[in-house]
Image 1 (cartoon, rainbow, N blue to C red):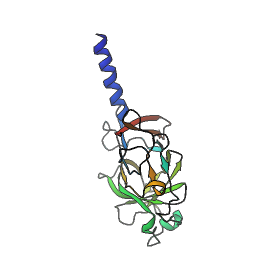
Image 2 (cartoon, one colour):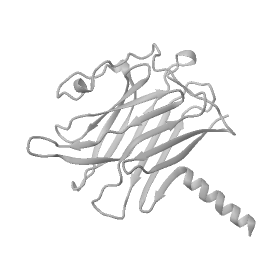
Image 3 (cartoon, rainbow, N blue to C red):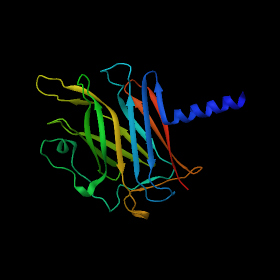
Image 4 (cartoon, helix red, strand yellow):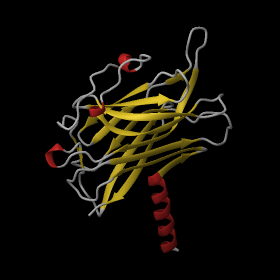
Length: 235
């Protein structure tokens, strides 16, 4: 009986580390390093999903802030000479037909999906990551809707952590129309390996029991908090 109970506890703990499910709401996160060696130059792959299937046409709760803590001693060198910081302001980046960040600033790309109920279809978007300064990355999220304004997310790198405040998103806002509030329900971001040694954009931290452990803390608009752990193999 004790052995069976222990097995159940281990299984539940493993599932909880990969996802959060509270009531009908569910959040998953898989944030991994692409290298297998501590201290090596690495890429990052992040896949985040949320859903609340109990109320058709309703939005899941909104993520307000995300903090991703990578293994101890992970190093983000956003000042590496291999990239050129994008000095554009949010206003410049959201001005129709305005300037765009130089390609030398680009360090990642991906996609996102937003729930914009009462619109029946979800809104897809492209995501591009640019180095903004020695401590910040810009995520430029461009919805596929015609004329939609890009959404700018400022990601701050502090030690081995990335802190991401998620802005409120209102689509289609204009004179006489308040717009439609949208909630991100999916994000995929790939940061490829860039440089090596002292010039590496990202250098992997500590390998613990043959695993890189990444912890993601989700803080929602209703002040609830969820913690999810992701792992990837290392040696």
